[in-house]
Length: 67
Image (cartoon, rainbow, N blue to C red; front, side, top):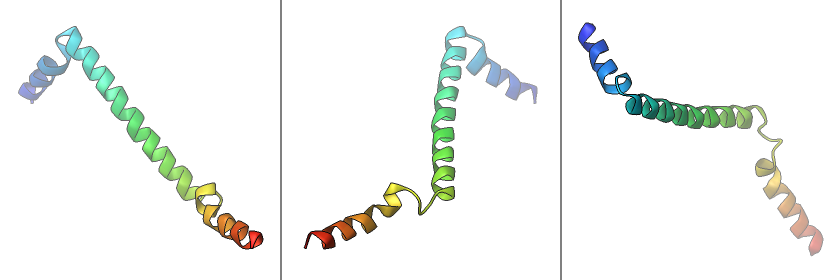
């Protein structure tokens, strides 16, 4: 177990540049995953109420009214 900790420490935390890079990559990955997760949750809980769900219905209604 100590070897794993040493490997992680030497790879990601020993040098300041590696530590900062690890922080930036971790924050970027978290941002993307959080954004995708919250967007999926929002779309799931609001399906049928959003423009992307209703657009075809209103475009078809508009086309038939013009004729």
